Length: 170
Image 1 (cartoon, helix red, strand yellow):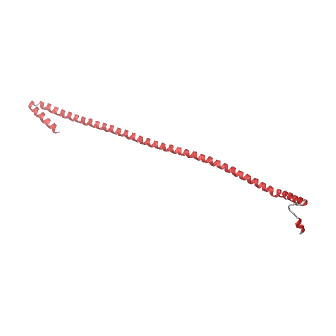
Image 2 (cartoon, one colour):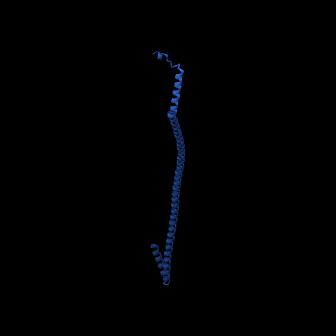
Image 3 (cartoon, rainbow, N blue to C red):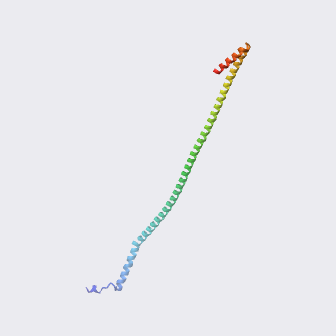
């Protein structure tokens, strides 16, 4: 028991210090070959993996930003094309309506001119018929008057009066 009482851990003896140092260096050498190298390699690999993941994330973020910009550009182009198509459709609609109105106006004008010409032609035909009828009556009367004139004056007057009465009745 006395032996344990003489031992003080805070004041090591020189032999114990040497053995402790020798065991520590041996332990350090073994650990550097067995544990420190693989741990350092694993840490380096992990650091590289993390850096690669960060680079991939940055690249993906840039690609997403580029895709978003392209999508915005495509969307703006699509909106512009839609607006252009709507404008063209509206212009086409207005053009068709205006063409239809112009066609209707010209057709109505043509129909009116044709109707006026038909009326004028009918009027002229009626006038011509009346003139022909009057001319035929006048010729008929003149023919009868000439025939009667040969027969006598008194008879001529009676005959002309009878013919005039006959013409007025028709």
